[in-house]
Image (cartoon, rainbow, N blue to C red; front, side, top):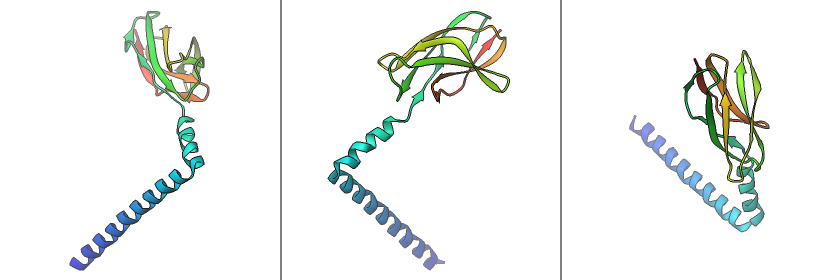
Length: 136
């Protein structure tokens, strides 16, 4: 049994040393080639994301509330659209605002559909996580 544990520890140690070698070699290679280093930030910046937070979690029908959030990887002026889940489909509501140059948005919303409303903010193919507002 002691030989198996010892053998396992050797394999683990070799794996860690090998992984460290690969990471160091990759760092040296990307520092030596400026094109590889320059393309890495572009790949990270290309991924877009949206956050959304309602000012309240429960409102009366047609009561005004706000949805605020941020967006990364989207151009300033992009349309930020509120969507509501109706049955199995996401329906765009007439609540639209442009994305600011700082990557933020704020949207005034009134809902009339009573009950738990599943909502999200969408811009192009990018959507925020779903959030909920109950209308009573």
